[in-house]
Amino acid sequence: MSEIESRMADALQAEEEGEYRRAARLYDQLGKDIQARHGRFDPRALDAFEGVARSIRKSTA
Image 1: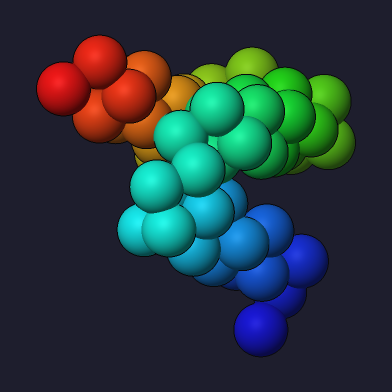
Image 2 (image 1 turned 180 degrees about the vertical axis):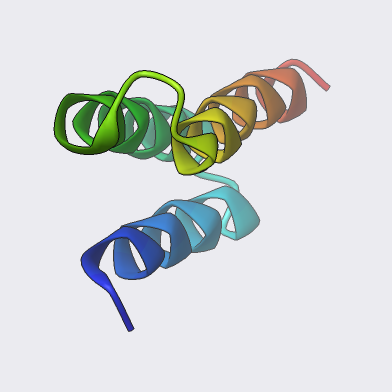
């Protein structure tokens, strides 16, 4: 498992455990790190930022 996959799994686990703020922070940092290392338009960054949005939405439900 790559570092990105591992970090995405950690964020997803936090989300599934109801730790939405932690999940949003993990997704956000991952997205920024992906952009810094692999370019601004790497699709994995978009996946991470979608995770941020999903976690925020779940936290308000």
